[in-house]
Amino acid sequence: MARRRLALAGTSPFSVSALVLVMTQLTGRSVRDLGIVSTLVDAVVAFARGRPKAGALLLGAAALSARIPGLGVAVSVLLRVYRKLA
Image (cartoon, rainbow, N blue to C red; front, side):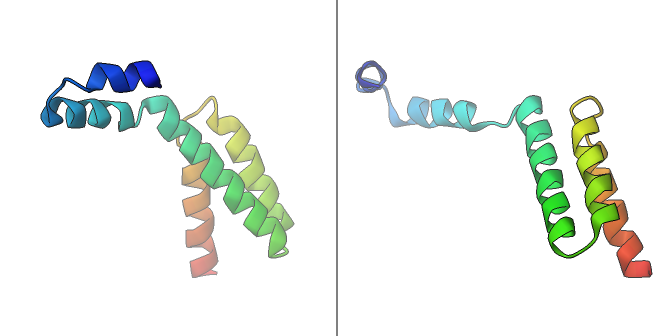
């Protein structure tokens, strides 16, 4: 950390802000991980609300999201639409 501060001490504010922007950009992996975590949270909420089938479906979708990106989010959205229509 001290070495990083020392390296940034002589730089302009514009290059530091560009460095922060590059460091905070989301990568494909972090977006996929965020989708998996949100699906897991939806599964926990479904179990807590007494919907074991929906919770199990969401847990399975979260597990498969590691291989098929976006599956968990799609299942979560479809479950919400189904609940609205039913």
